Image (cartoon, rainbow, N blue to C red):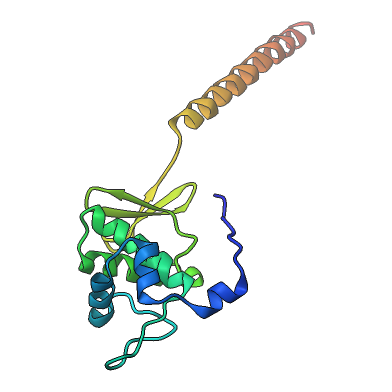
Length: 170
């Protein structure tokens, strides 16, 4: 799978994003961002609101997580299930704990993580692994095996009469 690299001006990323900008970029309301922060669901990593007049500051990674959470919510998943999915992803793949390179599939109320071209993990059912394979590839592999067997049988048929004839000539 292709890993997408995004380049930005460093000063934009380092400054962070206010609640208003985060809301605009993620298509979530400021009220929703406030609620998620207070619940401990998705907190801004650069600065949390602490008292009257303080401002939250979200990182780029925070914005990506918020947008993904918003998509999962729009697909009908509740916050508890989204949190469960995030925790399972972090547990199963701690090297990519940020989750930014994950490929997710939503199938009804299921969240599936495409771990590789051959593996899919159901992150809401204790990391149940599903194997992915192409039936077409299996057809090709079987056709190759049948051809190989046919060649071997033809070779055996040619070798056997020669041996049988050699034994009768004495």
